[in-house]
Image (cartoon, rainbow, N blue to C red):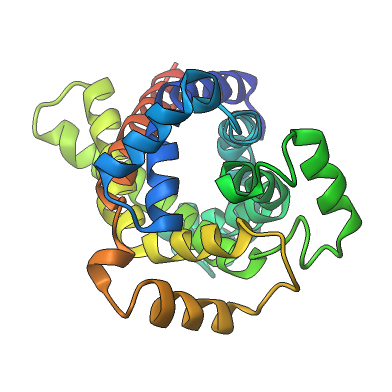
Length: 275
């Protein structure tokens, strides 16, 4: 059920891609939080200097490395269990098993990684620099809060985003890669393009509003945590002014970053799993 090389290579590729694409993430974060254009976000980061460029990198580095390490192993475990249980009965069609296992993987992801995402978003919010200047101060403050308003704020939209994303990724990864190989592409290229296409077009575009909502729910520390409906209403009618272009500001950079990250991860995993 568990294949160690897939864990190791998934974690390594995620670590490298996170370090490489973190500046892009930071620009996207500023756009999501302050609705600034790319040039303004870059100007803010340039003014803050190189030392602050990687402020907040520890939580996403840990989160993405753990995510890459656990993602495929957890999915393979669920897939094996589902195959053992449902195949004799034929309850779930065989082609649908990877997608169903992806739902379970997304639930585990949300439970494990929501605290990392919460810490990351608090650190990335420049408004918290004075009151919470260090990672230790952020951890202490969140630890003093209730789970719903502390480490697990915005858990519901994260759960929805991760379960849907994992279901789509694992449900489409192999069919898309196989279709590309039939066109004559080498296995590594087809896996890389499969990860890029699925992550950008099938996952990030439709689920991007959930990521914007999560950032805005998690970045602040003042007051009680508002519910998902209230937070979305405040974001959509207040900051975004009911504007879809403002909602998707920064989306192009998210797609670029996701293409690089998931292309590398998918290519490495598929290559190792084929040996």
